[in-house]
Length: 212
Image (tube, rainbow, N blue to C red; front, side, top):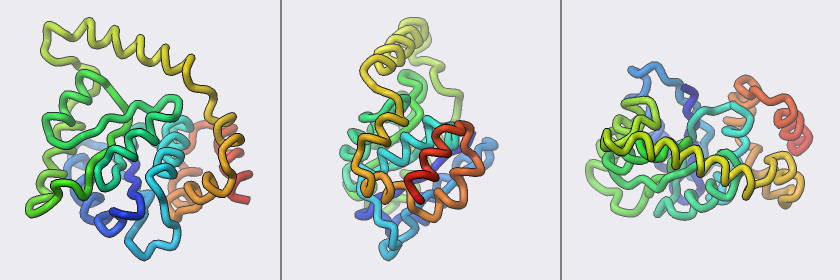
């Protein structure tokens, strides 16, 4: 699985800490982690949580990433932004239990974590435990066992609803403010990882058009 990490401006200083915790938890499971920044508080390509949602949607819709880890101070803004887009199902994750149940019950492809709220001594350990439970088993396994069938059925229903209530990502990118989108896609991580991993030629072409 290709896992992308995206940080916004208020929590950019924690990027290396989050990246290290994520890699430590998922590398033994055979997953790859791609750090899309922001890489620090001084990173010139500043991202808002809204732009995190745009970048997450581009990565997931294009197949450049299978899963996105993002967040902000409370995690709420990033979750709302990500869930504004098609083919993105983002959960608000505050604990290892949240992480496990979101993966098994909701089978999403994105999480938003509060990187400031209640983030104190031992914060990096809390992140490691969250990531361990998030990726310890394939998503959608269900919990508890007697609820597996209805949970999997509800996930399919939700996916079909989102197909109707959300329009195509290419249409969205064209209609959004061009500078907002360009800012979301101008980071060093996009240059290093996106085009090499993108599986959708039309989305790759659109990103090139926006950046040029």
